[in-house]
Image (cartoon, rainbow, N blue to C red; front, side, top):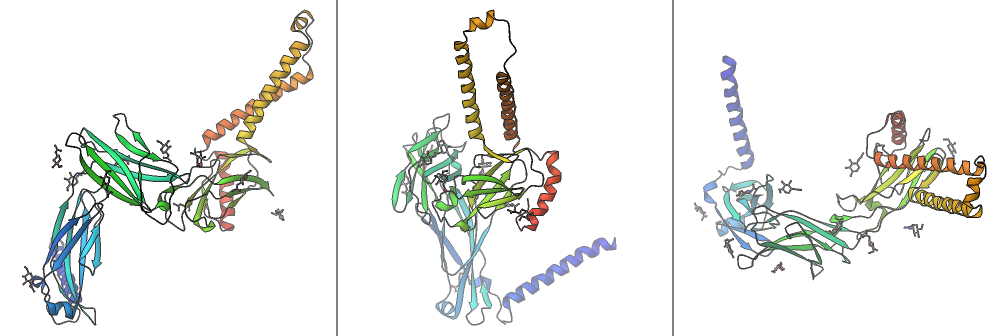
Length: 427
Ligand SMILES: *[C@@H]1O[C@H](CO)[C@@H](O)[C@H](O)[C@H]1NC(C)=O
Ligand SMILES: *[C@@H]1O[C@H](CO)[C@@H](O)[C@H](O)[C@H]1NC(C)=O
Ligand SMILES: *[C@@H]1O[C@H](CO)[C@@H](O)[C@H](O)[C@H]1NC(C)=O
Ligand SMILES: *[C@@H]1O[C@H](CO)[C@@H](O)[C@H](O)[C@H]1NC(C)=O
Ligand SMILES: *[C@@H]1O[C@H](CO)[C@@H](O)[C@H](O)[C@H]1NC(C)=O
Ligand SMILES: *[C@@H]1O[C@H](CO)[C@@H](O)[C@H](O)[C@H]1NC(C)=O
Ligand SMILES: *[C@@H]1O[C@H](CO)[C@@H](O)[C@H](O)[C@H]1NC(C)=O
Ligand SMILES: *[C@@H]1O[C@H](CO)[C@@H](O)[C@H](O)[C@H]1NC(C)=O
Ligand SMILES: *[C@@H]1O[C@H](CO)[C@@H](O)[C@H](O)[C@H]1NC(C)=O
Ligand SMILES: *[C@@H]1O[C@H](CO)[C@@H](O)[C@H](O)[C@H]1NC(C)=O
C-alpha cells in the first residue's frame, strides 16, 4: 500500500523539479521575470497560386525591438498529417507550399533575447491560426523522368470528387510552359496521368507542375494544385549499358557502362546493384564486380541496375539489365542462344526437305527400311539436347527471384567471407 502512494508523490516531485529547472534555465541567470502576458502575436495569411504566405506581427515597443534580439518559433502541421514542423525564424513570415494538403494549423510565439549574452528575456504565449484550403480532389501524385526525355505523372481522383470533374496538367520549366501531350485515362474517361516525350530537362532547375481540376457542372469552376520537382530526384535511369561477363581465374568478372543521365555523369554519382541468379543482391560503386567462384555453378544469370545516390538523393532504381547467362566455362547470351537455335532448326528443316526431294520419298517407302544414318541420329540427339538446354534456361529465369536453393548455400557463406575480405559490401 505504501509503495502505491509513494510512487505518484515521487513523480509529482520530480515533475515539479523539472519544471523549475526548465524555467530557471530559460531565465538563465537573468533576474528578470518572464512576462508572457506582455507579448502577443496576430497571424494572417495571403494566398498566391502555388503557395500561402503566413505572416504575423508583434506588439513590442520600439525600445524593446531595439534593445533585444527578436525571434519567433513557428510550429505547423498539415491536416491529416502527423508530422509537426517546427522552425525558429527571425522574419515575420513563412511561405508554405500546400501541394496536395487541404490546409494547416499553425502557431507562433515571440522570444526576446539579450543581444550580448543570447539569454532569453521574455517569451509570449502561442498564437494559433488554422487555414482551410479549397477542397483537394486528387491524391498520390507522382512524377518520373525516364529514358532521358520522357516524363510521366500519375494521380488518383478521390472518391469525394464531383461527378463531372476533369483533371488537366501542365508544367513550367526554365521559364517555358508545357501542356500535357497525352493523358492516361481510367475506365470512366477521367484523366489520371500524363505521358510526355521529347522533353528537355535542365537538372538543376525546378519543374513546377500545375494540376487543375475543372468542374463542368459547377460553371467550369477550377481548382489548381501545384507541386515542385527537382528533375534529378525523379529520374529513373536506363539499365547500365553493355553488361558483359567473363570467367577469369575461377571467378566471374562483370563489367558495365553507366547509363546516360540528364544530370551529372560523374562516375562517383552512380550506385549499382549486381544480381547473380538468386544470390543476394550486392551494392557496387565501381563499374565492375568480381565474384569469387570456388566450384563454378552450371549456369547462372547476371543482371545489373543503377541509380544516382551520392551526388543527389534518388530513390528510383533503373530496371534490371537483360540477363547475361553464364554456362560453366562459356558465356552465352540468351538472345544469341535462341537465335542460333532458331537458325539451326530452320537449317535442319531445309536439309530434310532437300533430302526428301533428292531421294524421292516413294523410293524410301518401296525400299527395305535401312538403319537411320549416323548423321541423322546425331542431329536428333543434338536437337533434344538443345531443347533441354532451352527449357533449363527458362526455368532459371523464373527462379531468379526465388530463395537460395540448397546447393548454393555452402558456397554462399564462403563467398560472403571473400567479399568481406576484399572490402566490398555484404552480400
Ligand atoms: C501586447 O498585447 C497584449 C494582449 O493584447 C497586451 O496584454 C499587452 O499589454 C501588449 N503589450 C504591449 C507592449 O503593447
Ligand atoms: C483531413 O482533415 C480535415 C480537417 O482536419 C478533415 O475534415 C478531413 O475529414 C480529414 N480527411 C481525412 C481523409 O482524414
Ligand atoms: C493513396 O493515398 C492514400 C492517402 O493519401 C493512401 O491511403 C493510399 O495507400 C495511397 N494509395 C497508393 C496506391 O499509393
Ligand atoms: C528511349 O529513347 C530513345 C531516343 O529518344 C528511343 O529511340 C527509344 O525508343 C526509347 N526507348 C523506350 C523504351 O521508349
Ligand atoms: C509512362 O506512361 C506510358 C503511357 O501510359 C507508359 O506506356 C509507360 O510505361 C510509362 N512509363 C513509366 C516508366 O512509368
Ligand atoms: C494552372 O493551370 C490552370 C488551367 O490551365 C490555369 O488556369 C492556371 O492559371 C495555372 N496556374 C498557374 C500558376 O499558371
Ligand atoms: C460551385 O463553385 C463555387 C465556387 O466557385 C463553390 O463555392 C460552390 O460550393 C460550388 N458548388 C458545388 C455544388 O460544388
Ligand atoms: C556498347 O557496345 C556497342 C557495340 O557492342 C558499342 O557500339 C557502344 O559504343 C557501347 N557503348 C558504350 C557506352 O560503351
Ligand atoms: C589466379 O589466382 C592465383 C591464386 O588465386 C594467382 O596466383 C594468379 O596470379 C591468378 N592469375 C591471374 C591471371 O589473375
Ligand atoms: C544498398 O544500397 C541501398 C540504397 O542505398 C540500401 O538501401 C541498401 O541497404 C544497401 N544494401 C546493402 C546490402 O548494403
